[in-house]
Length: 85
Image 1 (cartoon, helix red, strand yellow):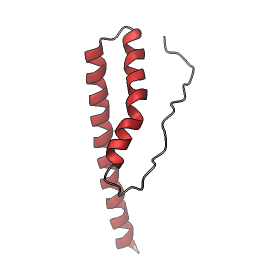
Image 2: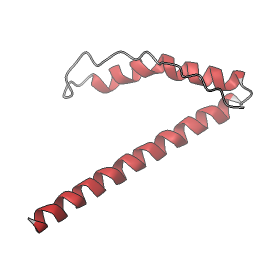
Image 3: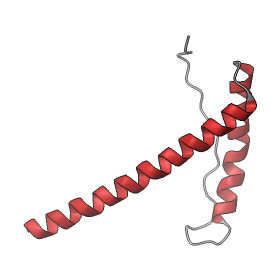
């Protein structure tokens, strides 16, 4: 059965501007501990660590694909609106 409690995840805000060359690495560092905690919680719940890590990769991949699809759809809608104006 699923727990109904909500857990807040403490992830620090970016400390550098979006164009900083270290921002990607800093983002990885910011999410590493919370992600490790998710893996540990899933393993504690009975999942194997390899299947948890594989699931995280697949979910992340799906999120990237969805984000790309959403961006493409937004661009298409903007183009249609421009043509209608």
